[in-house]
Image (cartoon, rainbow, N blue to C red; front, side, top):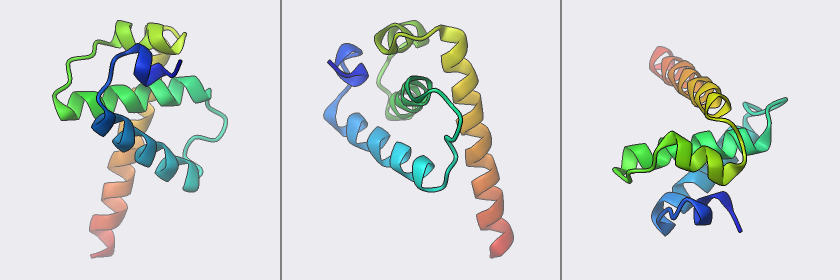
Length: 92
């Protein structure tokens, strides 16, 4: 059973999470990180933005990781997002 199924996440959020993970992988932004930590953080981010109320403990448990790992990967992804936005803005 997948993390998203264990956390009872909607199909729409699952698809968005897959798209984001693919983007992160293509741009080598996940190198050296635990895949479950990345998956959980992306899922948490997507759910949070979609208004799906999934807590860090629920997603961390579904992924078999600690809440601390989820928070750290979440912060990493948010930092990458800001860096990416900065690059896009500065190009324009």
